[in-house]
Amino acid sequence: MSGAPPRKRPVCPRCLRAQSSCICHWIRSLASQTQVLILQHPLEIHQAKGSGRLLHLSLEGSVLVVGEQFEEGRLRALLSASEAGQAIQPLLLYPRTPGDRQVALLPDLAIPSRLRLVILDATWRKSRKMLHLNPLLQTLPRLPLSDPPASQYRIRKAHRADQLSTLEAACHALAQLEQNAARYLPLLQAFDGFVDQQAAYVPAGDEFNDPA
Ligand SMILES: [Zn+2]
Image (cartoon, rainbow, N blue to C red; front, side, top):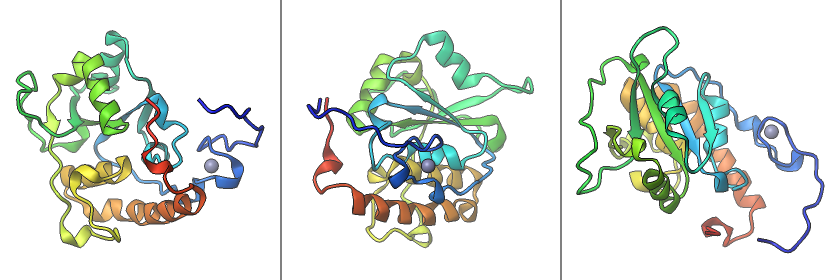
């Protein structure tokens, strides 16, 4: 915890950041075919480089819920509740690890509108903790993220799939599921601007600040 008292600064009600560092101009409204659920770790809310909220604000119909441990009934509803009475298949965007025997096999991915991509917006360490605290998440089939094709590399630094930000990983996964990279390109391009903005504001060294 920082000892300095919080200063009252006007906050943007949409992106929840100080008005002076509002990121709303990077929002690109996109209609994904796949449903999207973002489970955001509480430490990500005020993480300057965090991209989960920008992702949520850009993806129409996406749901963002903040928490580390979720009540099981509520989580079950978040994962698979449907509005049209159509069965929804949740799919966790997370790498498979050896020994995860309870992970379900990948379902039929042919109809994106029946899939709900579940994204853990957290550091790797915290995402593992979220999995540990929510056994229901451990049982979900996992979507392995392949390295994005070279044609999608508008990122200056070449990131491996496991080094991508929440927003980038989600966009690549959605493009993969929907076989439509073009749909997500505007948001990925806007994200480059977002990264530049954060680099200008955030003091060096803050990037790896993981207080727990
Ligand atoms: Zn804003």
